[in-house]
Length: 572
Image 1 (cartoon, rainbow, N blue to C red):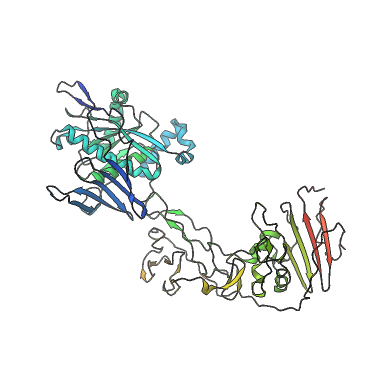
Image 2 (cartoon, rainbow, N blue to C red; image 1 turned 90 degrees about the vertical axis):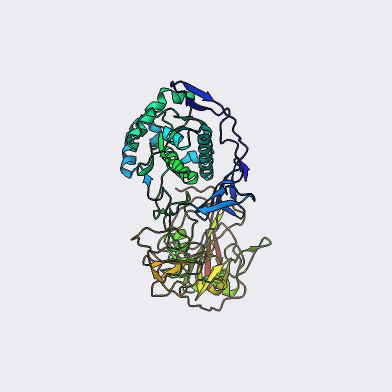
């Protein structure tokens, strides 16, 4: 827990009126070292807002999106406290809603965009740094009367409310400070019967003197009156002194719930977007990813989850770390859309060499020769290449004609400050129920999990947290009961949402391992400046590069050609 140092301004002013209507200013002594914020030990996503100013703990505690209110038990001699869940059915705010409907927000934004260029530019990059919002609060006469005409009691409940508001905005890196307040102790100077009219009247009233007395970024009036809606404000108005105001219905003793109301209306002024439960906040990126939806309570999208490692991809292969990698896909990225993975003999021949053209990794600055069982997990070998790619400098292409097979590949110098494009990616299939992990071909059984298609009643898939992500007709956690889909990790999908669950195609892709008799000693690749017989290259090397170095190594029964890219290459 940390003490809040910026909750109240220095020389905090409180304005009231005499019975003759004269304005009075007071700067009462208010303790500033008894307001705290923090989180529950072991749960950094929790939220705690407490005050010890009144002889005990008073505030709120939020754990797993459930909010509890903490109050000292009255007349207790043993320092007992009450802790209860907020937002039960009996709470006043559960059936109420914000007075800003979608239509009103659209109207306000259209009007303000035409008068305020800052709204059109957006605020996205501003949230990277800590922000400070100075708030002023006015309390209407009805609330003052409800508190038995006691200004001190009104002050304390306003400060307690703002303490919670300050805590709610801490995760957004926003510091909300209370810079002053006024109590309409001698009657309301404006009509308060209609909330829509009141917000305009309040904006006009504060410009006649209150804004000069208490400079602020946003001003709220707390009204002891029910309107059917809990508040109203102007969207994106925090930078506009004519409209940076709001009305909050303060009708009960529930300070914790009321703090949510104030935070909500302030959020409108800050142009925060309130996304309802069920709106997608992270789209599904690919066949091995899963979507996430807003839960309607957290300011963050649920943590990114994806299909469990080892799950079968719809088109063959297996998901691994949110991707479905394949050698065919890697070849098409390197050599164009027509390129495919070469035959087994290419991998068996090249990757057992243990050099920069064929290896299974690096150890002690030495290339590792692939074991026979791991050759499909070394460097990728391709066929059906119709064009030479443009690569970075110090990159080398090799071309191998081995019996009836054509093998293309690229090398990699370890230590270069860019990714190795020619390595077979982790998760790539290397045999029936086997995948490549760290250049080794391992059984899927090594990926330990307690979730399977049977766990999800074959109505969903397992995610990387080993929970079921259900199709749109089934509910988590086990996809057994009819529902609307999703998982316990993804947030609730909207009703009627079509939750797509990756489905495997019927035809299964397998590899047939081929064994070839290969000479025990292969010639090393030697870079020369000689030119190969272009007929043997079948006209493939048609790109004319001034400084290309072509290497020819001859052996029976194959020919190996190398094209090396230097740093300075010019086309002519």
